[in-house]
Length: 170
Image 1 (cartoon, one colour):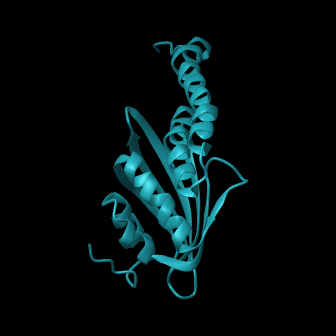
Image 2: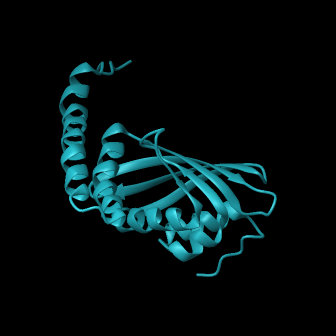
Image 3: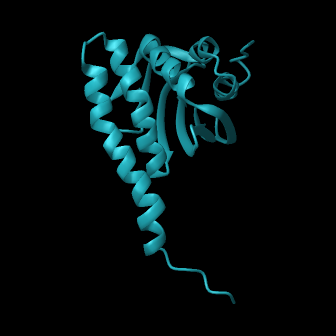
């Protein structure tokens, strides 16, 4: 895939994401890029190597990634997309900050709905834990996040409909 960053780093980032092309995506990033996790304020990925590792796991889990909106100016872009994680559709929003050099210096990500966010956590956590090389950590992460993902799926499918007012015909 050819990346034309000079035209628009956000456009090149979108094309690389839709193509699941990790190398092309990393080519849009500054060396000291920071990716802020949608899962927690306690985690960020710093530098091209960490972000490459993250997106290698992400692209292995997601399918049908499609960007729908890209708004902003030459330094700050807001991107929205949808993707599938198994049967779960997710919606993402990303705030992308571009540095003076024309490369992406910061990405802050949000994901909805909650069952999609917890499914993402369950899908990515063990893969990221394996990359640390710490024995037993992938198992521990999976054991911690799978019940949370199951509870949010149950709540969304069973409890939310009981609490949501029905529409009345006009």
